[in-house]
Length: 280
Image 1 (tube, rainbow, N blue to C red):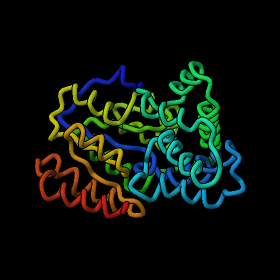
Image 2 (cartoon, rainbow, N blue to C red):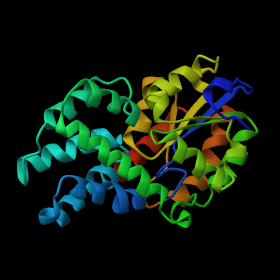
Image 3 (tube, rainbow, N blue to C red):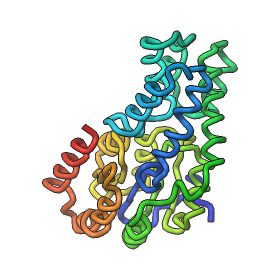
């Protein structure tokens, strides 16, 4: 069944948005540890400082408040630090400007920028991103399975809500992963990086007529929370290293509270406190 934005129509009173990597899928760590970081080291010839650079890459992208940052924003941040500490990164300013100015943080948008401006850093960033996608595609499928409790929570959500996957991941990889594990049957629409930012995706979904108090974003990173906050909807955190317990509470407590109209107030405050402490 076609789960694209073009085919989507609102059917339910409630809306539940779900991030993918590191939230529904236990794929975030392996992608960064095996693909994103190593491909950056290879592309820019950083073997001499490989260990500290990879450790810092994982801090930026996995274990601190910047967890889940868009790949190109994470790359620009890491390369700026590398430029200051280890080796000169030619054209780093070009990448930083593109990251700040582009309306779409995707390979397609970066490819257009490469055609418009002669920049070694933009070219290498595109090459890096394409290599990352290939390496992710070649990962053994069993390394990116859903967290325990995801399917049960999605099944519960579908009773009352339209379910939207809202992710900054590559659209083809995203659809392939969700189909592989039989989760697409619980999803009404899939919105990936080619649709724009998560905040923009949620904004477009709300235009379908959902009340903000009837909408929830489930995520594991600051970007997920900020996308929810910008649109005035609730946020439920999947806590790093406590994912299974988070999904169990989502099914048994968070979603029922959303249906009953008492998700806001003390419960939302408590969830946000847990979220911030988890990534401190």
